[in-house]
Length: 317
Image (cartoon, rainbow, N blue to C red; front, side):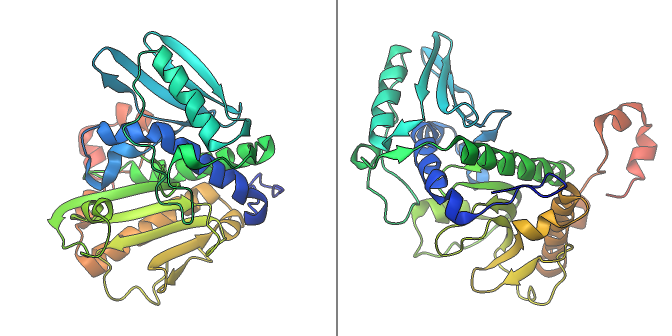
C-alpha cells in the first residue's frame, strides 16, 4: 500500500480484503437501526455518513432515548452516543460475535434495545448471523486509515457532484449491506422491478434513478473504483464517452466503471469524479429522457450569498 505523489492512495485488494470484510460486518450491527426509520426513496434512510474519523449512523430518536453510533476507523473503536451518556466498544481484535455481544451490553446500559435482527446481509458465503461468526479477526490500523481515506476522498467528489441536483437526492453515504459509497438522483417516474429479486432490491427500483458511487471491489471484481448505472438501463450505453480517461461501460456488470488507479492519474481526481458523474447524468438525459433542467448552478455558498438572483438565474451548470 502506498500513495502517489499527489497524495492519492493506492488500494490493493489482497491487502485490504480481510479488513473490508470485517468492517462490512460490524457496521451492519448499528446499521440495522436505520431500517426502523421512515423509508426514503432509494433506501436513503440507511446510509452511514463518512465522518472525520470513520462512519456514523444518523441520529435515532426513540421513545425514551436519542442516540447515534460512530464507527471510528481511525481510533479502532465504536462509540455509542446517547442523551444518557456514551459507551465505547473496541473494534481492535476478536470476532464479530464478540463485538456484537459487547455492543448489546453497551447499548443496554444506555437504555437502547438491541437491533431487531442480527442477520448478516449481502455478503456471499458468510455466517447467517452476528452470533454465528466466531472467526478471530485482527485489526490493521494502516488499512483502516486507508479505507477511511478512500471513502473520504470519494465522498468529497460525490457530494460536489450531487449538490446542484434539484430533484430528490438522499445524502451521500455508505450502504452498510453492500458496503459501497452511494450517491443517487431520483425522479418520480415509476418502473417495473424484476420479480426474481429480493424485496429490498425491488423496492429500491420502484422509481427511476441514476447512481454514482465507490466500491472497494470483491473477490469476483477485485479492483476498487467508481461505478455508475442508470435504472432502468437504457440502450445505447456502449461506445459513449464517460468524461474521464479509463472510464468504460462494462455490459456484463451493467456498470460504468472508473478504476481507482486511473482516477488517481488525473490532474484533479476530485473534479474527475464530478466530471464522471456529469457524463453519466448526460447519458440519462440523452438516452432515458431525464430532464436537463434539474441541475442548478455549481458554485459555492459565498458566491450565492453575494450574487443578485437575476445573475444566478443566468448561470449554466
